[in-house]
Image 1 (cartoon, one colour):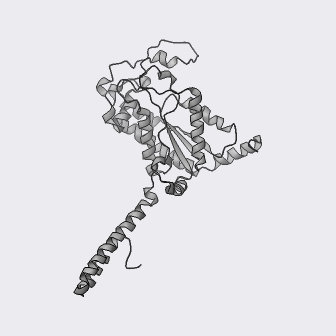
Image 2 (tube, rainbow, N blue to C red):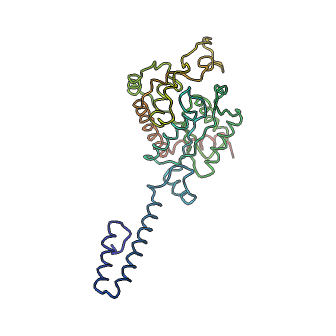
Image 3 (tube, helix red, strand yellow):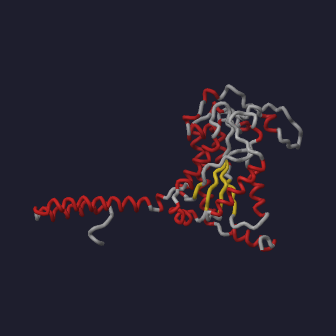
Length: 324
């Protein structure tokens, strides 16, 4: 190993040696002292630059990466990108309009610290027609919503990613997202879209039920569970004392057996609030968050290692003669 290195553990020995030599010849002491300072500055610069370029310090967020980071991000992520999907909508009278975005942002940020993937900036263009009557709701026309998602996935792929994981929090999106993914087979594409769905095993469900202070059956939107998560993640934005100024109880205003209609949610929850957010606790929020992040870490790892999905897509498109 050379005597002069950029490793911090060796700096004191290096500087001491320079000063020791200078003391043996006082006529060059000043020159040696300045040399020692110059060497120390160079070592600090070299070490800081090496740390900044280290894969361990590579940002996960797309918008925080530099263009020169891109090749390393591609390699470290195995060309996997997370698209965090939320919505802007009312969350009862007490929780922030961006509640879904807050949750999905934290899920992605925490999970990628353990299992790296690139995280696209917050995406809030989805299906939210049922809440257009409430303040703060951002509901785009259906064609725009579809085209936005398709164009976004295409652009993510154009930038080098061939695996896109949709991580969704908004309860009004799953049917739309599943159908969107199914239509990726309409024509040949050089990327695959995955949809993350957290597990709900019996152990998790039993623990969550025991933690509930309100009726779990009615805890759907901005209720005890979701408000608890927000209390854990962003307590500064939750106004628990306002949680009961509106009702989150099912109004049962429409009941047609075995029939689904577009107005079903509004008929049941005209305040766009389902549950009792006043019963929320930080402990429940921490429990739910830890469970979801653990599942997401495993999902990211599995997707990064997956070679079958793209292989089977190519086989499928070859048989349909699509894109040939």
